[in-house]
Length: 443
Image (cartoon, rainbow, N blue to C red; front, side, top):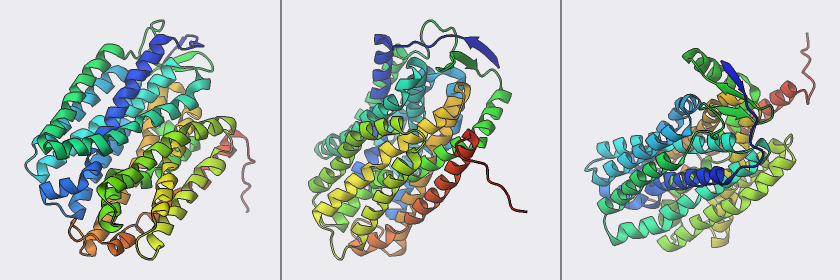
């Protein structure tokens, strides 16, 4: 690798804010694309005559591609920077939504979700890279939280306007319109986004503490970067933190929330949309609070923020499915707020990845981290759909509250597994940092 000494900009100028704003706007559209099927899940089931397992397969395929692409995207970002990768990502999502708009069968629709997942995988890591490249390190935790917060507005776009537009027009017009937005945003990204400030002469990431810039120059560097990222317990702590915190909210909003609230709990579509909107708004409100706390207590984030967020979600989740009969409305709103803690808490994982990895493999470590939550989400989505099918409740006509209760038990082991590994890797990270003494093995 070659090293170029350049001092980072102390204060980001107007161009940095413009580039970040365009990147975040692209991320909002990516979230809208990602959650578009969840907002119209019942309509999709009717259009494709799909049972619960098949409907879950749409989301599972999308998330599997998203998660599987995280490390390759991270490597590509480290090699080529954000601008070309984001542009290609927006075009892939546009192609996916156009395919979905015209899809006559489940097979074609699955191809659409593959394209969508591949394009979506590029956007969030690329925006995080822009934060690391254009902004000083001390602003990074808050900027990451704001990126996540504003991006979640895409869920509101998918939840209300998109569903209303679908019911006012048609499937083809709705998804074709989203595809058109994707093309427009790909042009905007290509015109506005720049990989690095003009005073730098290469597509690189910068260590804002030392002013040293690293450039990945070979495939050997890439392979070493992936292994070195995972070898550090801080990266593994980041992975398991992201694995454990957001998956329940993702599964709920991406696919199973609307069917559970309408067919299971007996709410109207508008009321169910209101509850899911509270999930989004609460996540946006909690983001700055958790981001500031994360900045103030960097060595206590796992125990003070991540694990409490998991505990709150688990308690609310179990309370709703254990309640005899339909849960009271206040408890469903409490569930929405509890699940909303997962998104901001998951952003702490990226602080771990950034803290424990040098800048030349920042995007690779971010990709490893980001894969965690989506691996957990696709497992949860698939298990819930499979459990519904095994009970004979695999279609909107046969959904029932009792079937959902049993199906919603299946993600609970994911929380348990994640908590165990968070505790293990946190201890290893603290030992690596010299904050805890190394364990003495008994002979």
